[in-house]
Picture 1 (cartoon, rainbow, N blue to C red):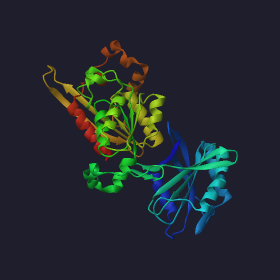
Picture 2: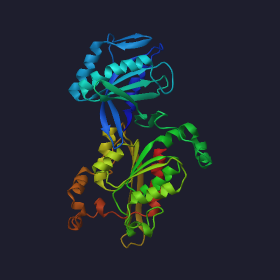
Picture 3: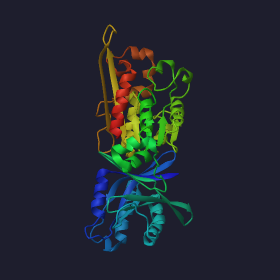
Picture 4: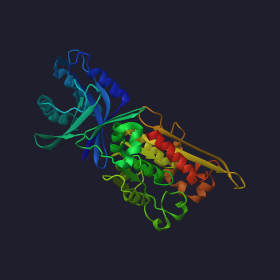
Length: 404
């Protein structure tokens, strides 16, 4: 199992302003988390903070806290069914390791926190440049707790800022193939891009193009989520998919194609043959740092909306709406848009990307009933025009630009 931590930009700002002192001394505080559990990764989603009052801790170069402060923290965690984070600062920049005193302090806290909250202690350290490190203290046996370093800490809001632990997610070595890409924004951003875990939900006309674009931007960890099979009626709109692929899973075909490029030596592609509305699809999505919503039905969008805000995972979504003129001699109008939704941003429902009543209708199964569909209004979304490859290409490009 892998581990990570996520927080919003506003939480990060409050922590930074408290912990990074003007006098150069260390400081501390406690925060609270809910556990987000994916297929291969557990994430502590920080959602609240209790800063110390004047007599709650002693600042003396190093820093220590008093029992009254810890009592307030445990009472709040118990009352709200939350896990506990112990957070402190170091007076220098970069990724933060642990001193002997740091280790002993967290070892002492780990069993007390586990006994009170029923969840592992998360320890976190911040440097003067806002670089985070984090670890979970997992109970392995009676009176035995083992430290597991988090592979990343992610700050999510108007932008996404990841902080990686190189031992868990090593930096990539890019060759001549990516020389032009890296020249656009430098090695630091390229390393952030390459180490993100990115999920694509829906591998149809838009998702198949997005997958190709992400590979050629240097992303090396991709999760493809789609329950659907290739059909002949899809072939005019799916990138590099052929007649021989009919009746195969879309995710498997796209995975094979990406691996055949041999563009990234350590490329990891996970194909998930489930819907995002199913448990298996949601668990795979929770392992990701960013999700692309390449779906056109209300229930998957509703699921992604909930998943994004509850687990602090940005979702890049888009949509296409085409209408033929009445005599079917041309396109009367076509519209497409892309946007990023998630913590400290607007949601898809508010953007008008779906209606909750349509999500409920899909869940009921009526949208698969031709007799029911026949009775819907002409302008209902289920009756809108089909897409064409050129429009999918434009939308996929807009979603990639949102990501970059």
